[in-house]
Length: 443
Image (cartoon, rainbow, N blue to C red):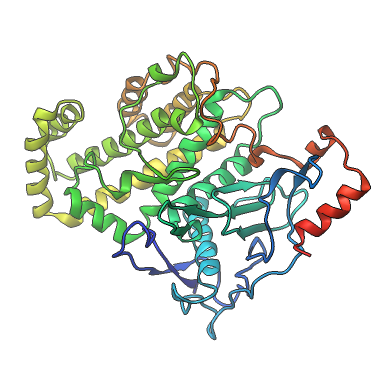
């Protein structure tokens, strides 16, 4: 038996009707200790921690690298119930956020370790045995880095504080970065193409999307809203974006590399052509599965492709999907789960095959085509080729990095930081070291 948690699929501050669902993760019942914690990761809620992990400046202005562990005071850890589960924690209770963020990380890893074919080996294993998951409420971002996954809060103009520890999309997205670094690795200095940064964001968005599709309620709600016409705006295609302004980005987008050939400002925007192509591949595989099951005709599938670009075709396509879904809703569920698992498998296999140095979107497209050939004999080659070509992926590449997106960029973030990087920083004097030691422990 696994261990139960209560998880929000949609955070309560985005949907007032949202309530946490009880899920069972793979952690054997009784294996988790207070934190929650196990032999691979643990949660801490620091008291007095004012700085995020990464590169910060000391009391006298000298830059320094700040990495785990936190050695100061912490709030009382969330302890398992009498049977070893954590589903006794409710949203209003102390410890719920800690249990929630751990459950989200473990749930996402469960999904993707199945696609990857093995447990994830942390990319920081040379220095840390476990991932420290830190809740830092006063910080307006979230990040994964060397030995840590840290979540803050969104600060609204009306005074509300929206904790990312309750946002499954944000947490799963950061787990996506952990997967990339642990499987793909960190680029060597001087080999990091702009499209590697976009790939980080696109793949992490897809990690979140496919993990969310493992909640039965998400599949049921998406199909109830769309009747299988996934090009309609729905919760499956939305991602929460943070710091410093909350935005809604859509996987169902029309952006192409043409927009970025002369330059780019923000890797989140640069990621959208790749995210959109992968989303379209998932939808087209879903449509092929519907046709193969006899749930829609080939003519309707072709019309759905036209409706993606021609609004005149939208109404007849939706009417056809409405009728087909009413006849066999269970068949639609099975087809969508098949498309989810094929896409997840192809992405995982692509990740195993790629290398981080000089990676660009064309590498992703060519690798996914090779994976399809190996997995299915090329069953989805036409779908994959067409969707990457529509985005000019592999044909056009990102231009120079121009000013304007620095406030949201991760180009110089803690994600690619390594402990040895401290050698490149100036040295602190004794007084600043003393002041800093008191500052970071809250003493």
